[in-house]
Image (cartoon, rainbow, N blue to C red):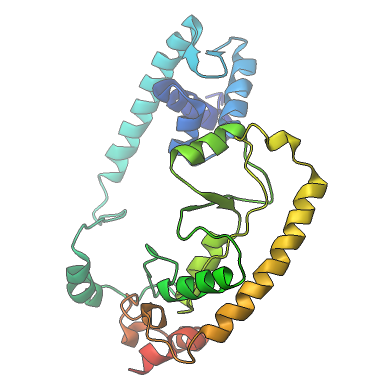
Length: 289
């Protein structure tokens, strides 16, 4: 039998069917775990092979051409047959295979199910909660120190952490505003979660440089003006930190100091000595108990 398809072509056909069903390259990419650009390239490669245009593309949507509709129906049937063939073959196995998902209340799962499971892989011993990543105690000291320096502040707010270094598009900027976000940065998410894992009190002193690109006057701001504001902010931040650190008590009684107390999912007896040694700095007091 002559070979007509390779792995790349079969993958392109599957992505084509996902895009046709979803009506979007982005949705198909999410379903397949790839980027929208990969979906677009795969379908372009498929169209080149067939010599037929499969989609009518616009900036907002995609729709199947007549040829695309015919090809989609045939490909969908073929893929369904492949899935059915695989199901019949794997269904003949004596031993069950795959992932078993169990939904249960956290407390029940922690006390009843975890002791029945084998040791978790090294490096996956904790699950900490970060729904309130900022320390109320530290925030009070930072705000008081800023006010003492005569610096205008806004208490609270929602921080959007974007991947950087880069700037938002106008569409992204307007989306963040529709969410009710107040400030955009690139570092807080990583800092807050690492601080929580280390049981360190965390607070944000967000020194604003300029408006994001949604603002009508955004384009009138020059790089020199932004750098000048950055320098002013750096000086102000140092003054605030000096005041906040001086005012903080030597001992703390906030929840941050025991953030991992109820986050350790693996039974201590099941954690290897190697893992205990690696996590000694963070978890020694819990493993000791």
